[in-house]
Image: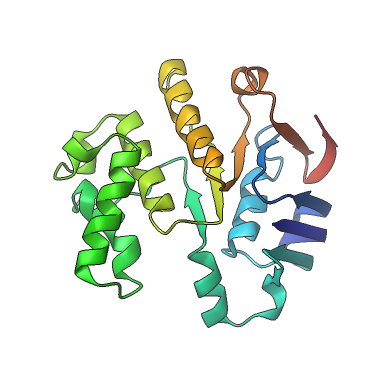
Length: 218
């Protein structure tokens, strides 16, 4: 599903990733871990197509991101959901509108948008909060809205960058249960985290980064 070949990423003189080769199989659940500054966020942004590698290749579902144009990349990204640590919700829009926007930008029919957004919010337990605004929600609820927005397009791949970094232990377990539920439906899930507590509670594969290098797996 995801294949990385000798991936390098530089930001000016700063080397963010060095010679990363990695394969994530279809339907797999993988944690990317390592200390702050290890390159976790950069790696996920490359997988999403938000950044281009300095060198190397990225294949998502057999498609080489280096060899497709902007239009085809945008189409592919519709099948890759991304959950941010800081939620990135639009505070002037309701919960429903935040989730629906991901479909509206595709030009989907209003009836389809309503149905899919409602189903996505139901899957994260927020149907009763559809008309609330993000700032009226708790941190855990805001993260669940962000997850609903990421899965409303039925993505093949779900990427999450430190999705529990701002949450307490109880909310962390709640959010991780959501990811496991999504994974059980067949979605390939990649979660970046530096939380030792979270990693101690999982038997899932762990890919370890340090200073931009892949140094091991568990």
